[in-house]
Image 1 (cartoon, rainbow, N blue to C red):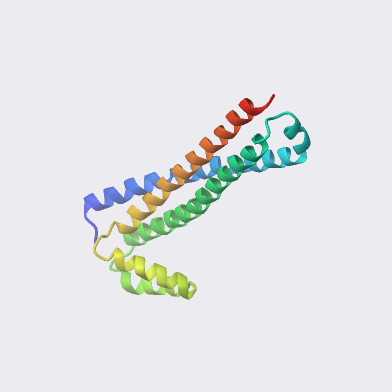
Image 2: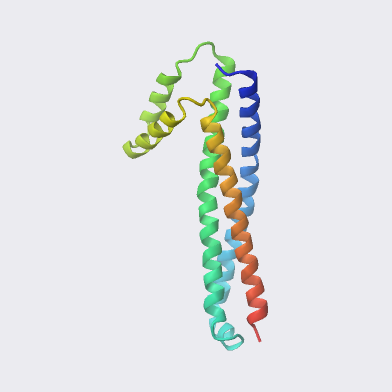
Length: 170
């Protein structure tokens, strides 16, 4: 079904998905740090206001909110990336161990297990990938890359919070 080159490309793309779990751990710890910092600032808001310039507390909370938003977006993509990785590994194992497999029938059965809206999205995605056997693998790699970008934006926003806090306090 796949050429040797396509199999190599699939394995390379799956290898890229392996990093998603590590990025997800970093993302989780940064979300925890963001939440703890917000709780600390809010519980000591009187002292933060008295020891900083007027706009600083609002700016600090805004930076933490943006960091958390990037963190939640990265978390969503991490879940998608992990589920796609598991699905693709299952597909590859099936093709390696089985003879002829009716992909259309298996895909139809798989999609039928989900709610109607999800079925429509999955069917549309399957239609897009009909001509490209690597479509799903490429899409999964793209999701893992976007997860990394959101996690990096989360970290940079948190660093901006630290710099703002350091510069804005008396």
